[in-house]
Length: 330
Ligand code: TRP
Image (cartoon, rainbow, N blue to C red; front, side, top):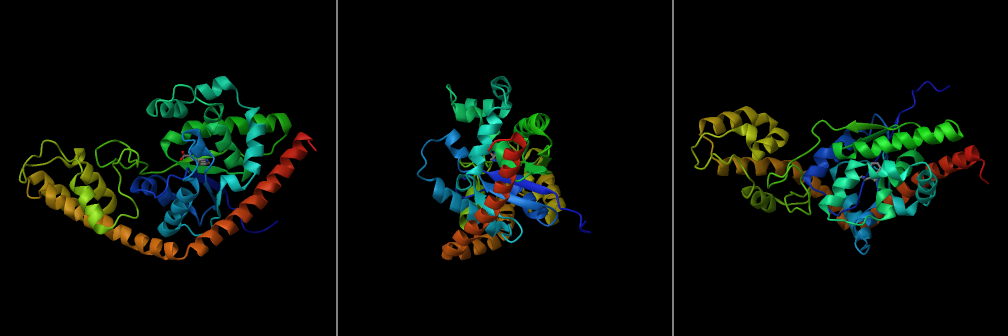
């Protein structure tokens, strides 16, 4: 037996929606980067999942590359964490088919995350594929025998379904898969600039990881603050202020000063926002710098993807051989 304790495996993924925003960083990416030494990480670009809510596939490739560049620029290390597209590893679709026999329609219809998504997007007649969103996600996780999945809270119901499918497979065909655990991020959500609980590109309330200083400044200028602090010297309530929540994340050193200044009325919202945007940009500057490098070296990005896809495919093939053996198929 090897002396080294085997690292646990993490499988995490995102749907490619193009350039990422601060909410993606705080809710997921930051955690992935932190965990890449402790765990064996695999990172999935869920490009088939995009089709569940948007059939226009013309941007999927470009959006995938843009997302990958942000992952790399933010600090994911391809040497430690292979990154790959779901569509390039056929085993995802194969295991998805098998798993679809192990999930009942009634169970999938009870999934609150898919229900909320259908409501938000005004989807009245859900497709078979959309209903099966968590079944495909289960194949994503279990092909790599993921022990843990770092996700935001909205994804927990999906992971619960993954655990059930793993259990069902193991009971039917013999112990094969781990029951993956959700790993919640501490600071799991960053509110949008309009005060909406979720930062999202489609709501137009986000700051992108690739936004330059001027853009961040302009975006922050429009951010909502304490509605009772109307004039510069009115005392404010940091606990209800969105900008204060950003300071808590990006300007920890000055947090007491900001809080006291706001409460006493000495610090006005305009200055407070300027301080905040400058701190956010200090944080983003190195990411933007690295993004420029990758944009200028697209071949490197494509090589990283190619290597990641080879590593992913090997692991996925190994799992499928075991699945077929256990099922006595072929
Ligand atoms: N459902 C995830 C999201 O919307 C994306 C995803 C697809 C995923 N497959 C996954 C996340 C596997 C974790 C593990 O963000």
